[in-house]
Image (cartoon, rainbow, N blue to C red; front, side, top):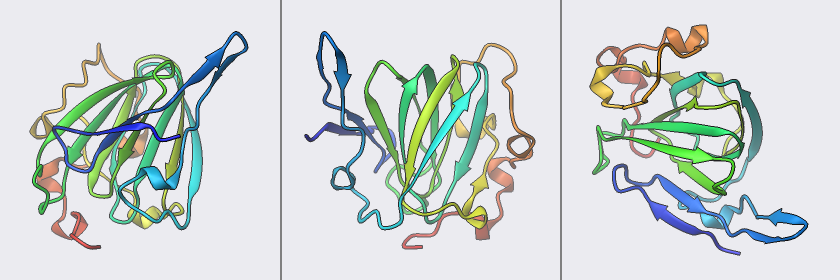
Length: 184
């Protein structure tokens, strides 16, 4: 099974994958992940994570130098926010939001150097695969609500944030040595 992958028109190397779904009167089946589907390979050290968020939670924006993410929403609805921090990218400085639902059978591939986060429109469960084990030194952030990012989250009111995400700096305050570097 090979899903139909579509590269983002706003941000290079970000892909949404419409997974093939097979169903009958018993329910539905879909293969969620294969390393061969992704432009960044091989996925040597894979970690799979499961995240639950209550409605009105915002997680992010986070970015990594050495880790790609692949997200698949199992239940609920989330709004993904993306911002290209890669100075060498043809889409450097571009932003995008993507709505994903557990009913969609859609995956989102996010390469290193892309600031990413999500807003839980509803209670939700998210599965995400990463291509490296968690490394706190490679878990960086930028303020989700920085106007310089141009992200239209469409959030009614104030979202629930972690203390860490509340402390993320504005884009203009990111230290140069923390920005993505090509080939790193």
